[in-house]
Length: 256
Image (cartoon, rainbow, N blue to C red; front, side, top):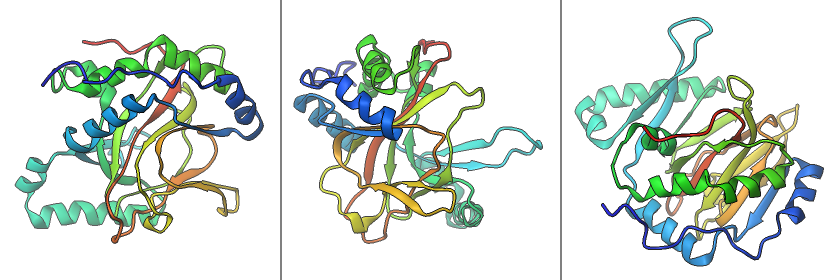
């Protein structure tokens, strides 16, 4: 695959980060429409929809008390090799744990892990990973969230198909290295009733805010706020596609 996308990766030059910084300071959440230049957004959407080798992702509790979750990634061939009964048993376990407010299930391409480990050499999303860790993007994010130091952006491409979800949680990071969470929404033509809403909850688990998936919109938010993604309905007319991650202040990403 060609190592260079057929479009130039760039932020929308008309955006003033200071305008959005005031909203973030006030609310701890801000949505920035038209974050990418139009040709950039259309090219990225094409890569995500037509050229991304998705893997089904879900967590399993660590076998060691207090240990980190095991994150399972299954590609289509691996799911087929498991057989219908074994795959159903895995998914039933995910759903049972979700009933107890634990976990998630959605399709993912772990961009930073793929980049640093040399997966899928030449894939266009590697160039996107570099863009998200470029000085321009990190400086834009730093200005909006008011952080003195941002060293890198974690990134995963995600696709929530019907039945997929993310239960309520907070994002601090294991070493409290996450300064803000972000979602780069790349979903055109979505309907509210299809689910997949990014929801923010108060201490009583009531919904304070909820955002519908949209196209070419960057959402930056304080990850210590309780949030979730509602389950995508079985009648949804497609998948909820985005790139998600955190703006972080630990050592920057490097290729292997």
